[in-house]
Image 1: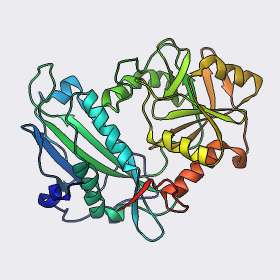
Image 2 (image 1 turned 180 degrees about the vertical axis):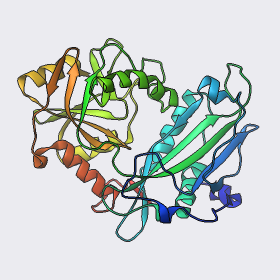
Image 3 (image 1 turned 45 degrees about the vertical axis):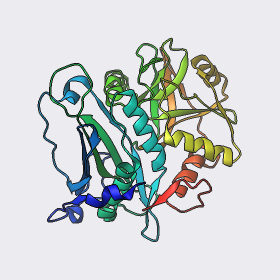
Image 4 (image 1 turned 180 degrees about the horizontal axis):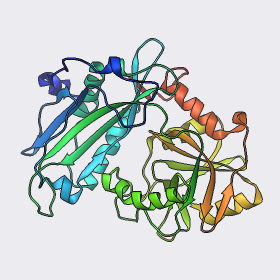
Length: 356
């Protein structure tokens, strides 16, 4: 990193912090934010200075391209505090790389590591007290970029804002969830933007997910365009345990290359699990549910970490998964291994954590 880029970083602090009145025990994911945010503008073909300022609304022209053509990308990351009050980021290099891949796919400028990771470190130094210790506590990090050039012209913007928000977090889901396997709507297609963390990918899921929730389910597991292969859930990559083998779909143009997904794969292999990364057919999972060999399904993502799925619906049938004892659950074993590593309660043989 070229740290000289941050020499002209502008820091404006709030007069009075809201941390003393913040209820950390009753946090709804993503609803409340810390005192400050980071912002950086792209104009005239280059990124400007990094600014850390009080959290406040961003004012844009009504014709800003983001409103009309959806040029917007984001990332989801987390920071943790160990027992020594040191703050750690988890695999920020992976989010940085994926952010720039998303930017390229949406005709947006890539951002340098210094502004992204270096700027984030400076922001976390300012907001260090917002990171709480203990398993289950974290500070959710939301970097994003939006197109800000004015004009209702269907062409890429030449002006952008890069911003980072911080939000104290606990669990995204409380308890096990029920899912519906998509057999009509599709999330992504080959050659599309399914592998990019583009804002439009999520808004396009809202309606089918709303229908699933009205039917009593929490989320949708998306399938390919022919609805024959399972891909990912709305907020998570998905793992399937048949007997003692874990299956997950390979990444593609349609599937997000999840940081938690790849971390669980590496952890599982390190722990000696049999893991197969290959296309997962809907019929295979349905048949395994019928014959009793399907032991677990769970989702994995930065927000959710690892979330167990208690059952799924496909077409007109619902399949309840068996109750697996906690000590025998691959989902819980992997979740424990990952969260302990993230919170510095166990060794990090992969060097995934970065100290502030």
